[in-house]
Length: 121
Image (tube, rainbow, N blue to C red):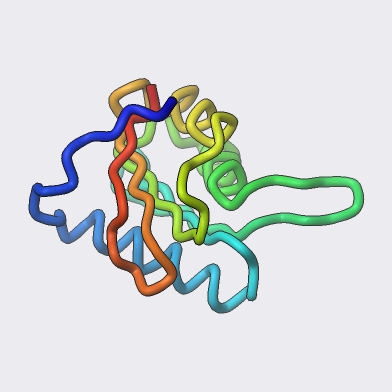
């Protein structure tokens, strides 16, 4: 079961930015999900769902992999734009591995509205 954090707090501009980037990746690539992560230096990594015959990764797993491959040491936040009601455990595990259990994962609807903030841990 996912631990949900309060959705009542005001949206940080940097969090709004990663939701916007995730939303644009989803729309641009016509994929089921778009994701973006922000690392400890403020750099962002944006990805869409990967669905090849030999490789399947969620958008969030792809964004985390891109951050790791680029030398990120930790994550400040992550965002996913999806029609799904919840985030997959594997997605939260990827964020947890790099960012730690307190890293917030923002789950947004296709229009960019925040639906939930989920703890990676």
